[in-house]
Length: 104
Image (cartoon, rainbow, N blue to C red; front, side, top):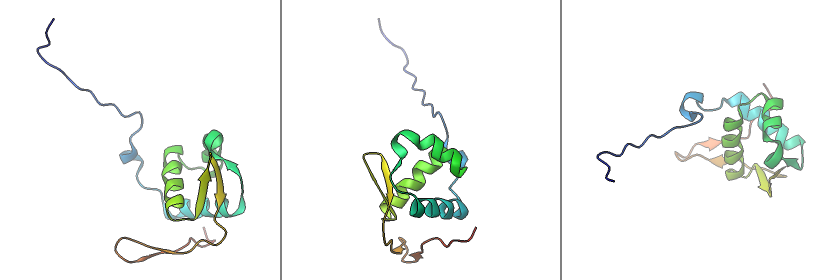
């Protein structure tokens, strides 16, 4: 048995490209939630949290990764907690990434 041709087919269940980047208002909503809630089990209840915040689950995962990288929140063993005193961070181009305000 020989193969004359091999075809690779790559399939994405959901395209992150088509979803786009989360909006500033979504980041502000998530930031307010993180700062007011402790011990949130995102490991098992991510879909519920996404529905509560009205944010697509895959976008929420991205946003949570960004929040942990910026030290706005921590996730240990699937449990989300706020950082007590988050500080502003610098962007790659040197501009400041400020902490979201409480406005909608």
